[in-house]
Image (tube, rainbow, N blue to C red):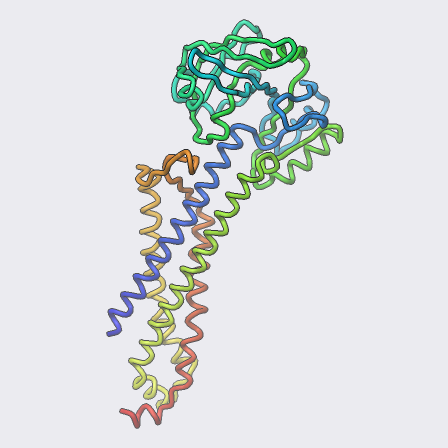
Length: 387
């Protein structure tokens, strides 16, 4: 009877370990993917004029502000770029849609959007205003029935109202509808001309940093360097609802891991108790020969440890293997409009795997200490009389 019980216990640990690994890899992958997309649109930190409001019409800031040289010396800062935004209305023969033009210059980091291009190319940001090239989202292109190489007419509601004709050079898609439905990218000089700004003005600065884990620390450093007349915001402060939602996913993983460890613990307790009950005669004999309770408990824990080890190793192979298949082939898909990604993302993190394995081993061993105490209650005389 012991062999089937051990096999069931091993299988339980294997499945539990695999589910924990998959849960952690998927949630961290999901978090990293969404965070990367949000940062791709808005960078890690933004600096604006303190008087700017929440609209898409910033109060201008100097494009060569004195604090920029200080920020470039900060080892945590990776890249600094200027931008400006302006709301407009796109009208075609059959459709009309609001849009926000984000103006950038030649120093803008296009790395994120190069991977998200559906068709066409990134706009060429020349110093001349003659080149009104624009990058729009696939959502916008589909709604307006436009494509790369088409012209796009944008109306700006201001005094006096203005109209600009743009050439669509590329179409991108990130899966973040909140942004894809809104943003198009063009030369910042176009925004300057519409706002009657000169070449030395911009809407604000975007700061990219090396380590996301230092976001709050670097945000405070930048705020002190920029001065109190400027307003700095981290990406978490700009989109708190999105990051709060991602934080909830971490809580879900903790709950899942806790439940699985509880189930695995119950399985190990049951297995050990069955082994003890099946071997009460042997325990009584060992005690009659002078063996102590601690020594006998160690014997049964040593029997259980290989079961734990086998289950954990098999669980790692199964969990990591399934994650590798998902990473390579994208077998499990998702509705992108609801989850912001088209396939389930996975994140391979060695520290997470080490912590997960070490925690599982420790939890299982600690759980075994309790039921092994039953051995001390077994009386040699009663066992031998029973036999």
